[in-house]
Length: 279
Image (spheres, one colour):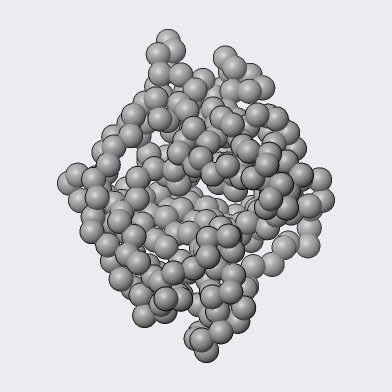
């Protein structure tokens, strides 16, 4: 059975889950916190027992946390799956440990001709039903288009003509993917040289969501003055893979009505169409 466009809008069963202080510490290290200054300004993200410091979590941690039971939307060849987009919205500040209830749904399904673009969404509440965060992932499924469906809205994001107002650069570790994979994504594409070579890469590549986490970390510090209460959300499109050890530069444009960003390795764009929101 191919992709089923009629699955759009279907909702799965809610699922309760939890996360711990250790989970938050591991995620923080996985997105590079503390590397340049282990006892400095990111100590509240990398330790739980430092004097007069309260542990905090990076907002982007929600991408590796519990999700609801996603309804089926047909069959596809996972070899041709690309994680095309990622968006998050924080309805409240993410605590370093807690419990939540996640409800997953299949969002819009678009016909891109030679591929399908499927959006999977998750809404998370606390145990009392108060909204905590929402996520939306766009999956590009090669070979699954062509049924004559809606192609989806056109792209309205434009790169500003002026230089970025701020540029924040972080160098990833050569073992970054080995550390980040401990957050739950054990895809051998990010660790096994043989598997990576079979997929057409010279060496294992960094998780796209690790690049996403580095980008969110830069936005938090540069735009929110490291205040997690101000971080409302971020989203955009994955453009090209990153090799562990490469330097990520987040270019940020602060306008009156929007915050735009783009992540690059030298001149190569790796995350595009970035939009950030504040709370």
